[in-house]
Length: 256
Image (cartoon, rainbow, N blue to C red; front, side, top):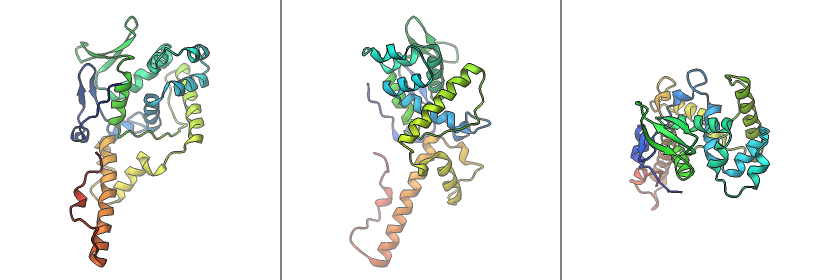
């Protein structure tokens, strides 16, 4: 896997970032995660989980969805996670939906080449996603989302047909099982962060915060927490003195 790290300033800008040979990656705005006008937080977190699965995670999910080919896939040591996620149409569609939420251009499956073509507005191919670059692609998608892999559940999903409903129900069962192993930290859920920042009186309200991207939300949250800590240090220094306080500490970046 090619290890590519996007520039912090570019990630913070909220603009889509272009990667040669693939396309433009975006961090979704919070309004895109709303349950009515967007895809809903459950589906968003599920997309993140899909992109973070290793081969064993996917096979566990496939088994919960009663896929008959799972025993054969488990025996194969040559197949990559991209291979096993795209061999069957239902799961290939799921992967395509997850990728499409974080990539600006349209994705189209090419059966002969066994890859997704990335098409611009004129339907011209500007890149592709295949087994060779899939790990890089999904790592970049997670970067755009502050690498937030919180798992949540919902019973209020809408489905286009029975087949889709069965697939999502299998996914929910899988995530519930996984959540028993790792409950996650509820302090860092998107809903809690939105609520805290809106209550903090620093300019964010429920009317404007949904214009932020996911990346911008997490950055604002952690920066706010860091500055609060610095203010406490300053107050302690002012009252008690000491040699450990540096007036310029508040300028230190919170990300390398």
